[in-house]
Amino acid sequence: MLKGSLNPAVILLQRKYRSLQQQLVRLREKERHLSVINSFASALLKQRTTEEIAWSITNNAIAKLGFEDCVVYLLNEEDQVLEQVAAYGPKNPRGTEIRDPIVIPVGQGIVGTVAATGQAELIGNTAKDSRYIPDDMVRLSELAVPISSEGKIIGVIDSEHSASNFFNEEHLHLLETIAALAATSFLQAQTQKKLRRYREALERQVAQKTINLQEMVNKLQSSNEDLEAFAYAASHDLREPIRTIASFLHLIKRRSTGPIPDETEEYLDYAIDGAHRMNQLLSGLQAYATLNDNQLEKSPIELNHVVQACLKDLSYSIKKHNVRIDYPEALPIVQGYPTLLHQLLQNLLANAIKFHRPGITPHIQISYCEDNEWHHFAIEDNGIGIDPEFANRIFDLYTRLNNRKEYGGTGLGLSICKKIVSKHGGKITAAPAPSGQGARISFCLPR
Ligand SMILES: Nc1ncnc2c1ncn2[C@@H]1O[C@H](COP(=O)(O)OP(=O)(O)OP(=O)(O)O)[C@@H](O)[C@H]1O
Ligand SMILES: [Mg+2]
Image: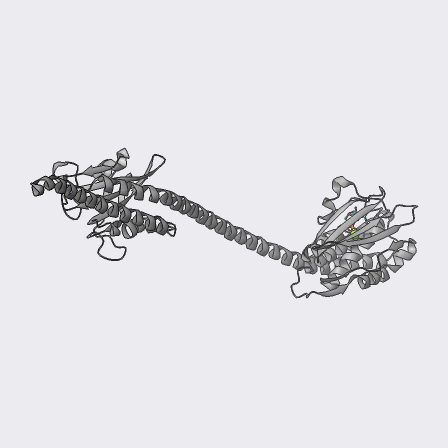
């Protein structure tokens, strides 16, 4: 009786015990799944490429869940097919190798349907599902979940098992969590990949453009050198016949027996003058072409010494025109080509003297300042000044703004100055003097 009355209670207890045990198993299983997801999530942080992420799904998640087989597919948007990028189980014989990889068009088979609809598929018996496409072997249950972000399909995680009804809702939930975690990483990796490709394409374009530009510069440089070599040879070779013409014209004038008619003498003078002028132009051109001499070497130059040497060279015209020249005592020492800097300053000072205003005592002021990168110089005079409209053109070859009868010259001096300054890596400009009377030529040389 006692035994009989206890039985139902024992049975109840036994049932409760069994149910608690089952709950415990389920809880343990859940705990295991959570720990897999946890370690998968932290492993994901280290993956950079889409391939690394896909292999992380199979190696860090699926392999620890006790599934038989799993394949990760990624969508090839261009061809609208799903490509196998990582696998676990018989499809992965070693390393990151996939045995006989296949592609599945979107919409075909269970995997293709998942990619088309964005809905997971849990198939209890594949034998009853006409969509089932066997890959390496026929298996009876299948679980396929989409990897998607903001409605955009990235790929599919597909797991199969030889037993029917192997996968349950818990597995579905688990794979969906893994897919959701992976989706963000895939998106990031894809964006990075696109950015990388874009940057590489841009770098290739820039590199190609630089090569083209360099080729153009080389061609230009070589044609420039050819031109200058030609200018030098021509100016050098033409001077000799010009000198001959001038000397024989002189001879004709001097040795002529009997009186020369006035008109003929005038023509002879024109011809002699023309020959002299041509000689001057050619010698200027020769000086200009010689500037490209690559034999020259830079050295430290005390500009105060250069200015003093120029003043000495120009002493005749300084005295003649009673010129006052002021310059700072502390002009800098610069790194440059000595003869060229002398030529530069002498040309500029000679212009400032030559283009003085009649009736006004010429006054020339050399000024200097510096900044972090440049030495700045200016030579200002109180002469006839420069029309700002033509200020840039006066550096062109043979450009003169004044009548030859009033001011002699070949129009080459400032072209030579510009070439000298640019040979030193600097710049030269011309402008009316700020005082309103005269011209100001400024140039800078790198420090
Ligand atoms: N300080 C200046 N004041 C006014 N005009 C100037 C001055 N310097 C140059 N110019 C103008 O610029 C032109 C070009 O000067 P550049 O020194 O090249 O030639 P040039 O003095 O005429 O001849 P060259 O120097 O070859 O003997 C001059 O003819 C003149 O019209
Ligand atoms: Mg000059």
